[in-house]
Image (cartoon, rainbow, N blue to C red; front, side, top):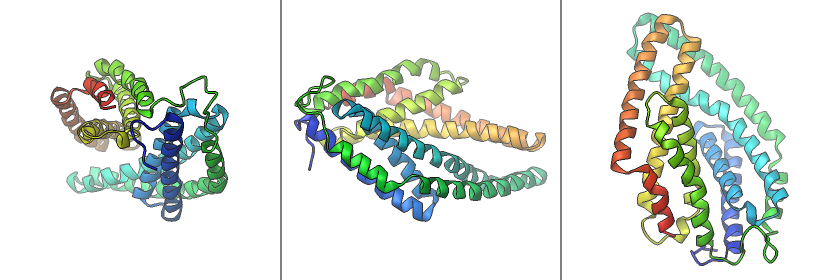
Length: 293
């Protein structure tokens, strides 16, 4: 069923949740078979998208059921996280070996070997973790919850209001943290604020995705801008993680050389972040999104 801006909330919430669930379980099946980098990444994103939909539509269903679902999906997201970080480190550091002097290159090569072994252990742990979470049981729980929307006695939301009106208000819940965090995140040295901003932008993006079917025009432009912010902040965060890894696991000389490379790249990305704020002001995106509904 296609959801429009006028679709009643109780119907739209069920349809959109089922769409997110179908995508999640399909990617789970594939990732469990391959454990390839892209499939793991896609499953992790699908799990976060499903959790955002569960958070959004929590007022529309029995709270206990959706809370249990969220906890189990969150557990799966956590299982996927460790291997993702190792995969990203391998992808980043591997081409850098050829750019470093002999001793530093050798040290980084040794670290890559260690990371590859860690990746094998994490893969085994992930497979065991996936096997410990029964997908059929979780899917049954998910479908049961989706089949029990609160229609006539819903104290938290008007079940018959247009879904666009509901989502317009709920977008503000995700847009406000972005605006609150931005002043501190504009300071290059405030890595923690930039990390929190990345998470806030990601949540806003996933919530905005749920409005795609309801918007006739203007969606692509705003979505592309928001995704650009998330990806850039994500790259900055990855560099912060890599810098910590280098400091903790390489000798001083190699750590210093690689640290300079990482610091330079991060400065370049922060400059791009500053430019983006001037070109497409982040605080305006939330209100522009709400204006499309």
